[in-house]
Image (cartoon, rainbow, N blue to C red; front, side, top):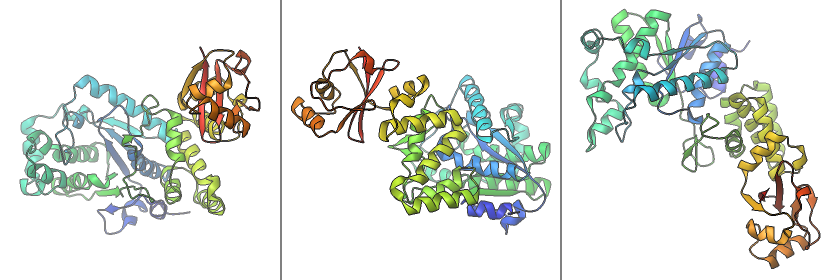
Length: 415
């Protein structure tokens, strides 16, 4: 049986750990491991997903795992290097906490994960008690060396005492979970290393006990070197109302060839043998994008379920492949409406006019040339007659699909 340390290294999920050897954390007695996430938005984004997959790997190996949602720390805000976070009202935080819980349960797919809210204990914490029993174990000298705090102290804006105190609160969370639930490992992104180690130090000093920190590396695009998780400067969210399952699928489908193997290891539950097989098929003919299609299907199914993954795959095939529009059910057709440009047309309108109205052709002359060159497809039918007109029979559930070549498409709706 493969050791967890070997799995995590092979999957690219290890960056820093507080023990001399990773095996001390992963391969000995079963531990209780936690990951913390603050409700800074209604959803996590794909940049957070690797840490969730690390937590899931621990759970699959038989360790107890905890997802801490920061209903308390979210009212303070982890210091950013450049600007103070806006304070959120309790109602907004609570709504976000519930949404993050729902997303976590989907990602874990029935695997047991304890979900806790640190507001349950931080809101009961007295100021004097906190300063005496936690604050005395920290020096200002140490805190100001932390990267985000240091950057803010050098800026004109500076940093409020509110955010300056954040590392103490995160350390207190670790101590609380250690005392109440026997938690002895905290994981997170590499940008959280300082905050996580603060908890390790607090427990060592306060309880004379050894606990551990483990972080994942910063994930980048192998082709561009840019930080993973952004698409045209917009985050890709796990909430389907913020990023549709189709757009989510497309994000993964557009993964570079240089990154696809790494992302299959990081973000899917495929076995090593399955990942190797997919990678080999991809190497044989990268133009088929077998790796990207497998990655997109697997991650979309993990986050949104098998039905949404299949629907996104089918719609992609209709828009950019050889799949006919007749293969789509009502839900698929509705997805199609949101996945491509839409043009409203009246029945009995010439296809030539529709090509120009939908901007698939710049003029009627060019539109006729496209038809002559056999480059225009209406639904599953090649348009060969320049005088062809749109009729109500061309629409299924009020939707038709007009293509010019492989890449240029437009969804037609009846006026």
